[in-house]
Image (cartoon, rainbow, N blue to C red; front, side):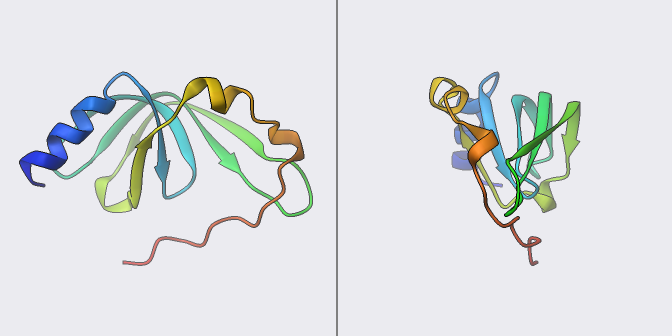
Length: 97
């Protein structure tokens, strides 16, 4: 991981982030040079084409860096206004290496 990538991850510390691999959302508490992540207050959003989005509580969660496709900061106000019960979508495919 280059210095620029480390600096970008530092800006997300203690903020709510979205990690694309299994649709995990949580508060980024720490990371290392291989993008292993420590998330607190995390939950997984499980999408379905037939019913609303289910949120599975995970709590404190460690994500291996090689499973992370994308990590991005979430606007918590916008996210809290989403009506997840009415969102229908096919689940994402697995990350291909």
